[in-house]
Image (cartoon, rainbow, N blue to C red):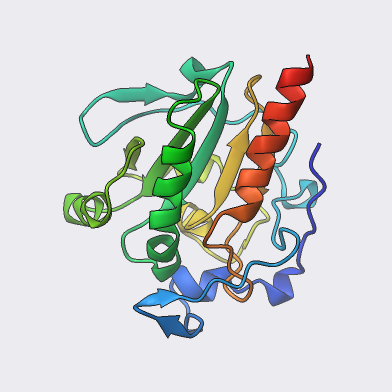
Length: 213
């Protein structure tokens, strides 16, 4: 299991950056927050936040992608699955988006890996904005009610936020071939990993483990 460092909720800046609060995003260059990737993942979903957390089975779901095709998580068993929870309106989702596309492109020819994004509780216009902003060589699944994302949100992760789906905006999860969560982080707006360095490491670690079996 991956060892992830959990940051105190007193220091957790996610909600105020993309969940309706007041803290401004970090300094911007070209309209995107500056990447300041920490040496270790800084805000992990841990057991004390409740389920699902690292080590739990990922909640199953079925959502439609940008072509109208349905994607069911359980149908991807046997693969390492990267899930990015995104919106068109969060600047951190926007900054991460080209790197998410690159990650998907890098693994496009590897049948062991599947990358998907879940667009959280947006109008059709918002969803189209996200999809149209950059070429997406991966399914962008629309969660129009936020119910799927809320099922991934532990009860004690940012418990003061009533709209549970918004807690996971610009969060990332990596699911192992058996369907268990092995990497799960919330966005750290102070030490922002827009390049998905830690998610890539989690994918590579799982692939190495699979190769040794």
